[in-house]
Image (cartoon, rainbow, N blue to C red; front, side, top):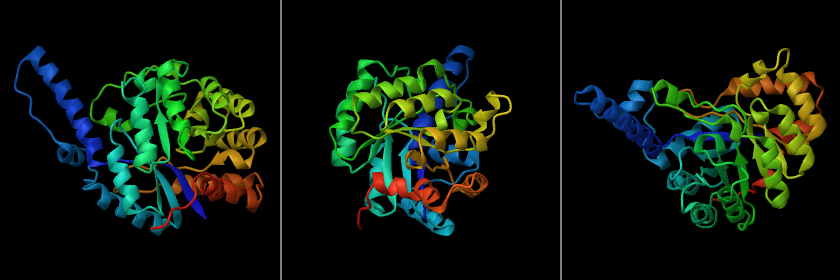
Length: 313
């Protein structure tokens, strides 16, 4: 069984947000340099990127399920990948409740962030909130972050995802959008503090800490509710000379154990779809490390099912 704990739901609303941000940027440049900027909508951005137009959230949900079926994947967590897009992924969950688990991105700086968190989890049937402190410039020790996690903790079964370490958003780079991220704010040690304050809430650190492996391992050692997600190509290993992904898995298994590792791919757009190569590589790594079938089953699917019980159609 394969469950993917980390995929992105690039909805029409997601592309609408990027189109608006680029229009604002182009308008600003035109006001400085002169000229009449052309406006581009979400479909224009998709054509420029040579990506498929996602269409309605329900249609994108169906496409994701067909993709999961093609690769033998049972379920996937899909993340609404801009703040304020909870409705899109909620529509996907309503369409495919037995196959899709919905997460949303929250900006703690928004004045209604705690209320949005409670609504997303309690009313829209989403299961997790995702924080990107480097992106939104809100430290993990900030009271605004604490209020969001507190709101999530008030909903039984909710999880919190905190991106740490290096952060890059490829689609923004391709569209010429600035990414003014403050990487100092994505510290796994701050995640440990949050996890200890809310021990009933599973807290996920994706990409093994994305360059802050040592700190992610320390956080997992300090708090039993910290989970490490294995997603993406984990190219950050190049920041530590000689480090390999095999060694990363070995260290994570030694500290967190197989019950606190969650397989993920970081898949996002179509037509690329689900990134089979990431699964194949990580499957081979666990084989090389002689991880037994029971422990591998936890990492690739069992832990996800334990945290996010199945919901019927």
